[in-house]
Length: 130
Image (cartoon, rainbow, N blue to C red):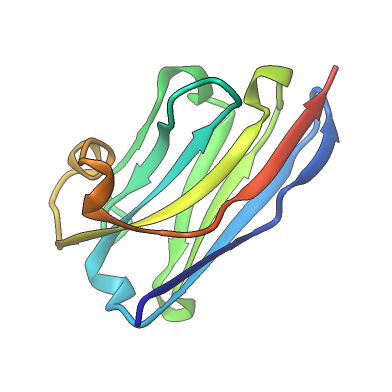
């Protein structure tokens, strides 16, 4: 059974930083792309950042480019999202998602699948105060 578990969310002031982590079990972590999504109240879930299975290629939504960094440690089955210069508009529930496609070559394709194409975590809340 696949499990995806996020951690690291919390309350931070604007301009601050947080680092999210995501651990998985029950899947070949080193062979699948990974993604961070977020969903704010009243808004659709959006892909924030994705990374290919080997970590070579990454993709970011425009609003976080230059502020967020996605990375992974395949030896630890762990995905990370370093979030710097946080803004109130970054407030959302953040979800980790594991691609069901094995060894997708491009991070942009990992970001653009239908929602049932991922294994999902339960989410971790990030709140940025102004």
